[in-house]
Image (cartoon, rainbow, N blue to C red; front, side, top):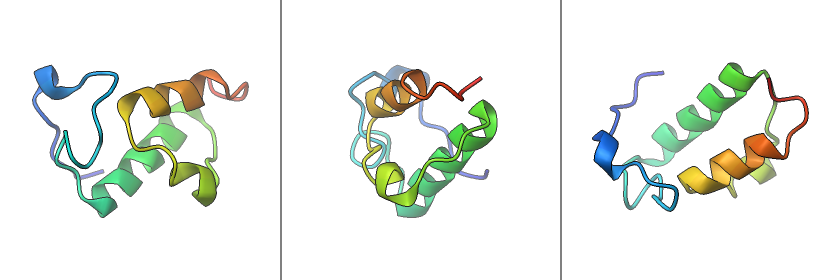
Length: 68
């Protein structure tokens, strides 16, 4: 993954990947891909489209029993 990481103080549970963290749509896709790789899960496209904040990403991982 090659997206630029935001400053750590910007990363809060409610931070939006696009408006708060400055990621474009391709960066957001790369974030989802990184989550899939890190936690050994597959996120269907229609569900990935709903993951737009840090908190939504955390919630998705927590409710996915296959996540390791």
